[in-house]
Length: 418
Image 1 (cartoon, rainbow, N blue to C red):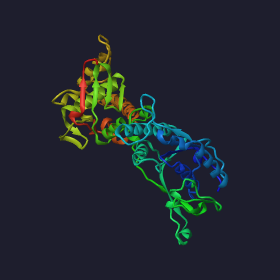
Image 2: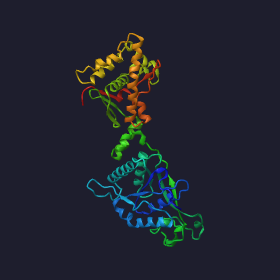
Image 3: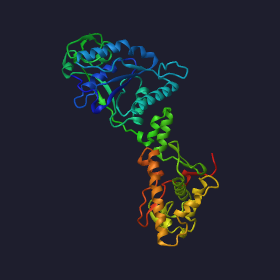
Image 4: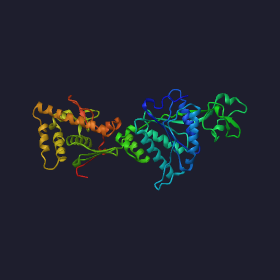
């Protein structure tokens, strides 16, 4: 067994292992990953996430065992000494166990941040093993992968077993004789007698490691890509993901600042014309003005603008959308400027001929397209959120409608400066 390629697809392989009383889970995982027939994984770096009480077990003896594994199975290790990562309290003292709420919260924050940081590098392929430590540690490690895992990343668990022929001996060999043995680190390629967990000598060659791949659903794309660079608590990440998935996000517009805030996901400014168009759509949805909606056009639909409202704005009974667009645009500019008047030259509140009506539609097509692209960029191009906060494409075909898929209570518009 040789490791001809450590970096399949030009990835740098990083192995993270949660650890408890038995550092053997590290060598067992490395052995099992190296022997995968279809997609062997040879780590370039190993990180052991442990508590302070057991950290000493993951230094010298584990390093020696990894060296023996590489030598006996003809590997060419590139991982060097395994890194030992210990969660720390605010005062610098280590978390010695994950038994109470405080320790659990801190461990969750620690492993979530570690996985977020590693997966932020597109050159890294991450494999995380759940095999060691308390169940709480394994759960939080798996949850971190559910938050940040990418298609190239993997999650697994390992268990010690025995070769089928070893089970036929009298008395039969039991897997627990290896599991409970301090001298067992990995199955050996040749006969190797070690003290078993039940008091008798056993042959390490007769052990096997069963690796179980754990499928997981990653939700990292529910948040804007810019947030990958943030460092937040596990609880905060969970809340943000829940808001994105459940649709509990509020659009907050501050007119004088041209500021757009979408829940905790995005906070940014827009150019005057894009902001004015965005606020106009938000007002239409907030007031549920009839005439068009995501389901179609006509008096039975509400909340969306239609192409007919743009080309024939004087026909809208409640408010002339072009006049309102110019009002919003002017209010976002410096007081006393003539930008509102300049806009009136390009778009006509009460068009009198076909040329003016056509120009209204043409004039708004470009800022609408820029607006869609900007919202998609700020929200990370995620379809579920962008569908609600970004307008659909508008073409020049008669009868098209465009707007925001938001309920009135999901929209807050503030005219004053914050």
